Image (cartoon, rainbow, N blue to C red; front, side, top):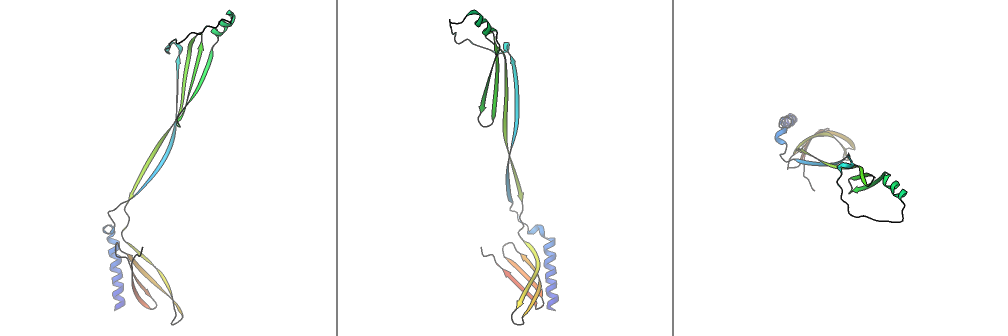
Length: 181
């Protein structure tokens, strides 16, 4: 009679837990945020012809110790000037000027810039307020020097602790556990 009553009670608890899972879940959400940093590299190349570059004369230097052939050769020679500028920690800018006959014949600009993008991913989940466990338990009895086994069903409530019911060789057992820490 008691055995049938306990089996019926276990079946009712099990049916209640299976069909009312949503009502047992909590409305509080667990938020997990992940940060991911990605670097993308951009390259920009621009070129201008000499007539498109504005200029301004700022000083004239006279040196008398050169001859005419040297001055004509220096005037006619095309010279290339290169400069590299570091832009903080994001990249470099390369500037190249070509100068001949006291004019800028061409200018190129190349920039290699690494852009940092930070992605924030937020995941919200609903933690379960209650759970149902089943398992096996083994006991060693000192009075009859035997090892006994039992099958158990445990229900973790939302606030009230853990309730257990077991059936083994010695009969039924019921227990309740509370959280200490």
